[in-house]
Length: 104
Image 1 (tube, rainbow, N blue to C red):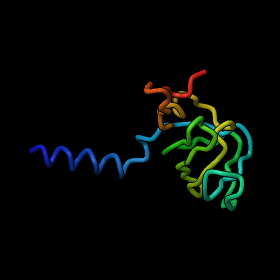
Image 2 (tube, rainbow, N blue to C red):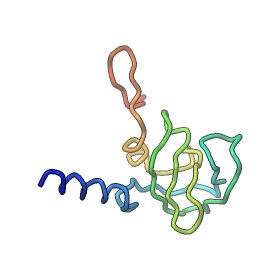
Image 3 (cartoon, rainbow, N blue to C red):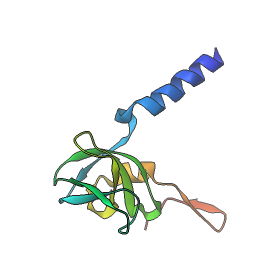
């Protein structure tokens, strides 16, 4: 029974982009193949577009988006509205034995 529950939960987590955090673009953003300006531009995220977030780098500088109308890739996190969504998918920072979440 436990194996079935675990397998079902794992399948839902992998197969359902609707479980990802939701954010909105605040400008026409280049979608890049990786988290940085030196990565190749693979598309454009239009102003106001809603996307799912699968992960963000620490301090939410770059976020990997799930975009139904275009390529999935990375955009600058500062141009995405939805800080609660970005916090949910950002890895925590560990400093001095304490875990912080990048809050000021």
